[in-house]
Length: 463
Image (cartoon, rainbow, N blue to C red):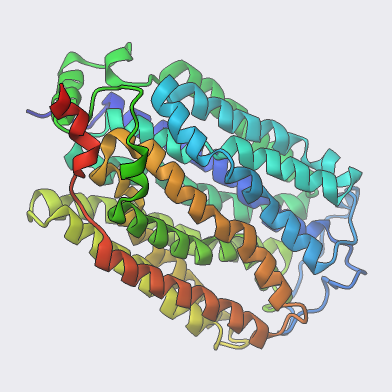
């Protein structure tokens, strides 16, 4: 029994949620580029000096020097860039629980809308002082913290098992796409207008998404107004043996003592260490070490995420093909993709630290490093739905809570290790990231599983 993908409600949901994650990540990373322009160029972080020879800088349009600039030292910058994650970590587990209990549609919708509103307030907060800006970023994080757990909970009701990798990679590819578009576009906006417009323009894009999401999305196939009867039956039939009836009973002890879940936790934490360190600090590295201007900076900082997006999309198709057509076991596919998506980035990140001032090679290695990370989207990243679809939102809340810690401490540690901004200091940052990645890949390979765990369906047998 099958329902075609073209014009289907489940693929419409994948595309709209992709747009939602595009907004969420654009709002998360635009500060990384704007930060280069928000700093007073005559302060200690002299924007005009860099380790490598600076690239020719096209003259900036005269009218764009109206926005304020600030004297923040590298430590303050680290706290500002990391503060988002202090809010983000708070709502992970509650987000998974609330999505299961009350439905994911409005939770995710209002979560991203909250982030949009605080993004629009960013310029005002920055003028009031670093403390206010940190507070606004924490509040943005609180809003965005529910997004992944809520979406995982939603896919538990919407994604047929054999289409899981495809649907989820389309959905979550919005995260890379948001990064790919926001980094270069933020650089262009800073260059031609000023840094405040970065927050106003992306805020407006977010409001448009919220309107579409409110009008077009439903919590489950059974409550969707425009879904075809064929598709509704196809989805519910494919999931009937996997989902336990919605009850208030959540087997917390079984969840927290599940080794396959802890394998995902370790992998997720390790992968995010590299991902978040680069996400928040790549524009700084491009400026302070490689000497690229704000206009070139955004373009070059986006390349790694463009590669990541392409490989995560291709990886999703390949993963489901291997499971469906080649009959590879789910666990074999998840582990293979996780190994490529974690060991590959580690090797090329360390290599990037040894390119010195060879700009081309540095950009190529950083791009390959992040691109290979895209394979993990079909690895540990969606493994929650394999081991416990009924509790996928809660499981993702747990793993994402741990995986947020690198976002909180990674940039702060990296900035404290790179006070003098030398290549050797940055090399240390890359080595730490690579080592953590290799450990995570090894742990997941040993303890990961690909089948529904007994505790996740036991309430079915009680009936």
